[in-house]
Amino acid sequence: MKQTKTRQKNNIIGLDGLRTLALIGVLLYHTFPFQIPGGYFGVILFFVLTGYLAGITMAKHYDGTLSSILLYYKKRILRIYPQLLIVIFSTIGILFFIDKTYLVNADHETASILLGYNNYWQLHMNADYFTKVTDNSPFTHFWYIAIQIQFELIWPWLYALFMLIKKKAGRNRMLLTAFGLTAVTALIMPVRAFMHTPATVLYYDSFCRFYAILAGVSSGLLHKENRHLIFLHSKSGMKELVYLFVFILVSIILYLKAPGSAMWVYEIGMFVYTLLCVCMVEVVSVENGAGRLLNLTPFRYISKYSYEIYLWQYPVLFVCGILQWSHTFGFYLLQIGIIVLLSIWLHTVTGMKPDIRNVLKRQPAKN
Image (tube, rainbow, N blue to C red):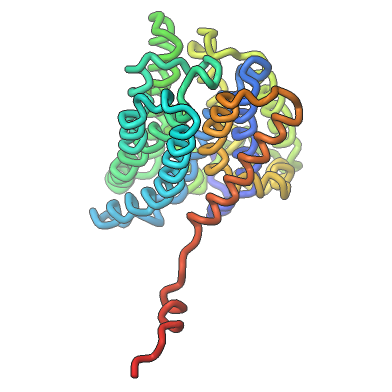
């Protein structure tokens, strides 16, 4: 590792492109599960990006007091839940008129989503993420939201621990602790895979998934301390471009050739791809050509609505499947169009923040 100059702002050039690549993988998997059987690998990149942004931004929220932790929770609730609630209850309302049989467990499922244990609820219900859309629930993909909520609950306290270690033993010990915790948790999935744990359990279990987020956290903390992995960088920027090409190529191969039922995915595949994701985040975290190539306007636009697109994609596909719309090219374009329009609408509605001063100015004066 080497101490070097880095940009200390949230909008890091290239992250929008990485987020778009992850979203495209997941969307293609949900739309074409047999043609793009490994698109779910995009979720790993989402996890790494979540951890990375948490690592570089938490200092803005945490000042060592309980009130700052509570304020962090409030901000995360306002970021996650308004869109989530609208998607859940809109979908339930539509299914109520189309086919009520899909709402048999809606109350329990909704509770599991909102309380952040949907991944374990799906395991309890023997759900299989790798079956076709209409054999599942319109909220099957919310297992990811559950793990994100679980992480948000523990992250302020984990960050407080990291800061305590930094204060008592120095930043190198703090960084070593973060990477060590990542390494230990990364062993859980492959060890359980070699013990013949079912693929669905490995896919849903939080303890098998946290290491990807912690890998991102470790990278974010590293960059917050102005440290970088120098073997990934070069003055000419050629190394970064090579890594970008390799990462995109590997992502495409995995998206096309990595079915979720294959045990090698859990024994080694997800671990290796997590490392590649961390390296790619490292590559774009400093000013270089690779980051600029991922900073295209379409990527920035898609990234802006990525959360809403993720929420809407499965419900839209699920409802279209129930309606048995013709599976033609135009049909798939229509689905994508509906998802995009709903996402823009949801982002706009939930992003409205009326200025109370302007509201007061419009109040009629008292006589």
